[in-house]
Amino acid sequence: MTDAPEMMPCPFCGSEDVEFSEYMTDGGPRENVRCEDCSAELGGWQKPGDAITIWNTRTDLIPAMLAEARAKGIREAVQIKPLTWYDIPEGQDCRIGRCGRTAYSVRFKMGHWGYSRSGYAGHIVSGKGAPYFTTEKEAMEGADRDHRERILEALLDQPAGDRHE
Image 1 (cartoon, rainbow, N blue to C red):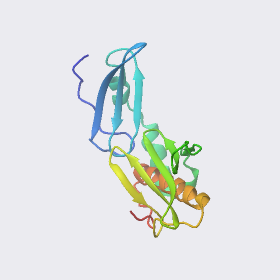
Image 2: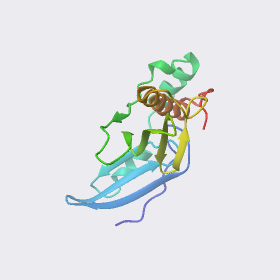
Image 3: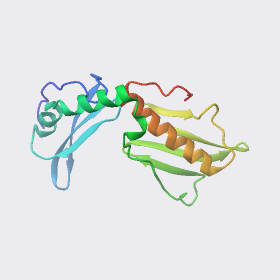
Protein backbone atom coordinates (compact mmCIF):
# COMPACT_ATOMS: atom_id res chain seq x y z
CA MET A 1 0.00 0.00 0.00
CA THR A 2 1.16 3.55 -0.70
CA ASP A 3 1.29 6.87 1.15
CA ALA A 4 -1.67 8.95 0.05
CA PRO A 5 -0.96 12.37 -1.49
CA GLU A 6 -2.93 15.40 -0.30
CA MET A 7 -6.56 15.46 -1.42
CA MET A 8 -8.64 18.46 -2.40
CA PRO A 9 -11.91 19.20 -0.54
CA CYS A 10 -15.10 17.51 -1.68
CA PRO A 11 -16.25 18.93 -5.05
CA PHE A 12 -19.89 18.68 -3.98
CA CYS A 13 -20.10 20.05 -0.43
CA GLY A 14 -16.63 21.62 0.03
CA SER A 15 -15.82 19.58 3.14
CA GLU A 16 -12.20 18.89 3.93
CA ASP A 17 -13.21 15.75 5.86
CA VAL A 18 -12.18 13.48 2.97
CA GLU A 19 -10.81 9.99 3.62
CA PHE A 20 -8.59 7.81 1.44
CA SER A 21 -8.53 4.04 1.93
CA GLU A 22 -6.85 1.09 0.32
CA TYR A 23 -8.21 -2.44 0.49
CA MET A 24 -7.65 -5.87 -1.00
CA THR A 25 -10.08 -7.83 -3.16
CA ASP A 26 -9.78 -11.15 -4.96
CA GLY A 27 -8.85 -9.06 -8.02
CA GLY A 28 -6.03 -7.24 -6.21
CA PRO A 29 -5.61 -3.94 -4.36
CA ARG A 30 -8.19 -1.18 -4.70
CA GLU A 31 -8.41 2.47 -3.66
CA ASN A 32 -11.33 4.53 -2.42
CA VAL A 33 -11.91 8.25 -1.67
CA ARG A 34 -14.95 9.32 0.36
CA CYS A 35 -16.34 12.58 1.75
CA GLU A 36 -17.39 11.92 5.34
CA ASP A 37 -19.88 14.82 5.29
CA CYS A 38 -22.00 14.27 2.14
CA SER A 39 -20.95 10.65 1.35
CA ALA A 40 -19.68 11.46 -2.16
CA GLU A 41 -17.49 8.50 -3.07
CA LEU A 42 -15.03 7.45 -5.73
CA GLY A 43 -13.84 3.88 -5.43
CA GLY A 44 -12.68 0.64 -6.93
CA TRP A 45 -9.58 2.01 -8.66
CA GLN A 46 -6.85 -0.56 -9.28
CA LYS A 47 -3.87 1.51 -10.40
CA PRO A 48 -2.11 3.08 -7.36
CA GLY A 49 -2.82 6.78 -7.12
CA ASP A 50 -5.70 6.83 -9.62
CA ALA A 51 -8.48 7.40 -7.08
CA ILE A 52 -6.82 10.51 -5.62
CA THR A 53 -5.72 11.80 -9.03
CA ILE A 54 -9.30 11.55 -10.31
CA TRP A 55 -10.73 13.00 -7.06
CA ASN A 56 -8.36 15.98 -7.38
CA THR A 57 -9.14 16.51 -11.10
CA ARG A 58 -11.75 19.25 -11.29
CA THR A 59 -13.84 20.80 -13.98
CA ASP A 60 -15.80 24.04 -14.02
CA LEU A 61 -18.87 22.10 -15.14
CA ILE A 62 -19.98 20.82 -11.71
CA PRO A 63 -19.74 24.19 -9.89
CA ALA A 64 -21.53 25.89 -12.80
CA MET A 65 -24.36 23.33 -12.73
CA LEU A 66 -24.72 23.66 -8.96
CA ALA A 67 -24.68 27.48 -9.15
CA GLU A 68 -27.47 27.36 -11.73
CA ALA A 69 -29.51 25.01 -9.55
CA ARG A 70 -29.02 27.30 -6.54
CA ALA A 71 -29.98 30.40 -8.53
CA LYS A 72 -33.10 28.90 -10.11
CA GLY A 73 -34.23 26.92 -7.10
CA ILE A 74 -34.63 23.78 -9.21
CA ARG A 75 -34.30 21.23 -6.41
CA GLU A 76 -36.74 18.97 -8.26
CA ALA A 77 -34.48 18.86 -11.32
CA VAL A 78 -31.55 17.34 -9.42
CA GLN A 79 -31.55 13.57 -9.92
CA ILE A 80 -30.88 11.65 -6.69
CA LYS A 81 -30.32 7.90 -6.65
CA PRO A 82 -33.29 6.58 -4.65
CA LEU A 83 -33.22 4.15 -1.77
CA THR A 84 -33.55 0.50 -2.77
CA TRP A 85 -36.03 -1.22 -0.45
CA TYR A 86 -35.60 -4.90 0.39
CA ASP A 87 -38.05 -7.48 1.72
CA ILE A 88 -38.08 -8.05 5.46
CA PRO A 89 -35.52 -10.78 6.20
CA GLU A 90 -36.79 -13.88 7.99
CA GLY A 91 -36.54 -13.42 11.74
CA GLN A 92 -36.20 -9.62 11.48
CA ASP A 93 -38.75 -6.95 12.34
CA CYS A 94 -37.69 -4.21 9.93
CA ARG A 95 -37.47 -3.43 6.21
CA ILE A 96 -34.15 -2.04 4.99
CA GLY A 97 -33.66 0.63 2.32
CA ARG A 98 -30.13 1.34 1.08
CA CYS A 99 -28.26 3.78 -1.10
CA GLY A 100 -24.48 3.56 -0.99
CA ARG A 101 -23.34 3.22 2.60
CA THR A 102 -26.42 4.85 4.10
CA ALA A 103 -29.22 2.58 5.24
CA TYR A 104 -32.72 3.30 6.50
CA SER A 105 -34.80 0.83 8.46
CA VAL A 106 -38.59 0.95 8.77
CA ARG A 107 -40.34 -0.88 11.60
CA PHE A 108 -43.54 -1.04 13.62
CA LYS A 109 -42.76 -0.36 17.25
CA MET A 110 -44.87 0.72 20.22
CA GLY A 111 -47.99 1.14 18.09
CA HIS A 112 -46.44 3.31 15.36
CA TRP A 113 -44.41 3.03 12.17
CA GLY A 114 -41.11 4.88 12.11
CA TYR A 115 -37.76 4.95 10.39
CA SER A 116 -34.17 5.32 11.41
CA ARG A 117 -31.03 6.11 9.45
CA SER A 118 -27.61 4.62 9.89
CA GLY A 119 -24.28 5.31 8.27
CA TYR A 120 -20.84 6.41 9.38
CA ALA A 121 -22.35 8.97 11.77
CA GLY A 122 -24.16 6.26 13.75
CA HIS A 123 -27.83 5.48 14.22
CA ILE A 124 -30.20 8.45 14.15
CA VAL A 125 -33.98 8.39 14.50
CA SER A 126 -35.56 10.76 11.99
CA GLY A 127 -38.98 11.82 10.83
CA LYS A 128 -41.01 14.72 9.53
CA GLY A 129 -42.47 16.37 12.63
CA ALA A 130 -42.13 13.14 14.59
CA PRO A 131 -40.66 9.70 13.92
CA TYR A 132 -44.15 8.17 13.68
CA PHE A 133 -46.33 7.23 10.71
CA THR A 134 -49.61 5.34 10.40
CA THR A 135 -48.46 2.86 7.71
CA GLU A 136 -45.28 1.16 6.59
CA LYS A 137 -45.61 2.85 3.18
CA GLU A 138 -45.76 6.32 4.81
CA ALA A 139 -42.63 5.53 6.86
CA MET A 140 -40.78 4.37 3.72
CA GLU A 141 -41.87 7.55 1.90
CA GLY A 142 -40.68 9.60 4.88
CA ALA A 143 -37.29 7.88 4.74
CA ASP A 144 -37.11 8.49 0.97
CA ARG A 145 -37.84 12.22 1.49
CA ASP A 146 -35.24 12.46 4.27
CA HIS A 147 -32.64 10.74 2.05
CA ARG A 148 -33.31 13.09 -0.87
CA GLU A 149 -33.36 16.25 1.27
CA ARG A 150 -30.07 15.40 3.01
CA ILE A 151 -28.31 15.02 -0.34
CA LEU A 152 -29.89 18.16 -1.81
CA GLU A 153 -28.96 20.14 1.29
CA ALA A 154 -25.33 19.05 0.92
CA LEU A 155 -25.26 19.75 -2.83
CA LEU A 156 -27.18 23.00 -2.97
CA ASP A 157 -26.41 24.51 0.44
CA GLN A 158 -30.14 24.95 1.02
CA PRO A 159 -31.52 23.62 4.32
CA ALA A 160 -34.51 21.35 3.96
CA GLY A 161 -36.44 23.50 6.42
CA ASP A 162 -39.06 21.12 7.82
CA ARG A 163 -36.87 18.06 8.45
CA HIS A 164 -36.39 17.16 12.11
CA GLU A 165 -33.84 14.95 13.78
